[in-house]
Image (cartoon, rainbow, N blue to C red):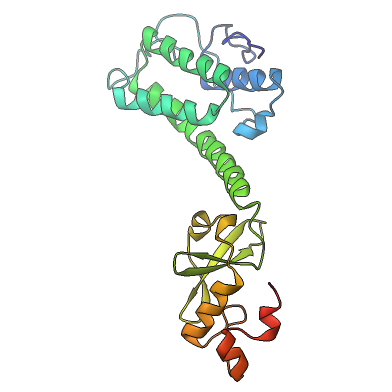
Length: 236
């Protein structure tokens, strides 16, 4: 994987070793682009607002304490949170993760204040949320890829039907008291191996007197005996 210098990109008017939020953002975007990854994936599709150029003298920049800053050095909790956010943003990109974590360590050596740590944390939180949302969506799609829409699945004694929402994500409704109702997170319990068999559907119909496919009460003597009607039974 191609690696670029941590300080390879700086905003106009900033020094080459500037570690302000804007320059860090530009550098991260450059690294992603160099490795064939769209910066938009990590919320970097829009350049961060460029802060005023910082002088090279003491008391300015993320790597040096500001003269007007009060409150002392960044706390261990802040540093741990910042490292966690960077890990979440970078995901499986180990090279990018190593670069950004090394940058944090450089800040600490130079003396990061609580105010500077807070600013970096607030900047990284939205990016971490977007990265996590992207990964969660991909994991959800992979988990539900083989679950058939409209099909019935049985997990233990619970019966579910697979649906799809307006955004294209699959979800499950559980058969409760004769009606299918949405149950948050139920889709995560279901695998293709839980696909309901005709025998299971018949067992439910005999026990309840209701068809689990169409939710109608069984009235025909033959259907009552079979536990399912001829139309719904023909789906297997």
